[in-house]
Figure: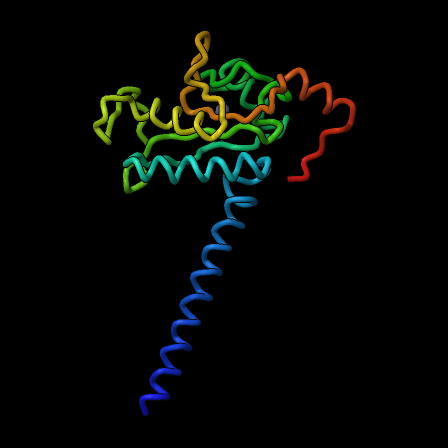
Length: 183
Ligand SMILES: [Zn+2]
């Protein structure tokens, strides 16, 4: 009787372990290829997931709103507020944004319910530093550049990994046919 109980416990433990492993693996697979991570350079997706986790550990919740954008999507965004309705949201045409090469991702601050907060002085973890800047600092610590540092046109939600390449460099290689969306 005792023996069979022990065996039963072992089976349960094994099942729980398998479930944990598959959930972990599933989470990673999702981070690499689905939803807002779709089309991103795998390292960008991986680091973005890490930033989100570190921020949460510091009491700051974020959600990613925008990652890879096709050239066509970027052109449509550029046209908004110029030839189509709505406010102007970008100065970059198709091919002029790191988003078009899967190297940028945008976040927004949220609460536990997923509601978005855009206020620049939000400081939910009460450390005297704006949460946007906290997340920017976390992002920089893992290798991203943060749009909030841009003096001429600050872009607080924007994180990018450029590998030292300018948009002109990326356009050059893209036009040479070397660039493929193989992520
Ligand atoms: Zn962006």
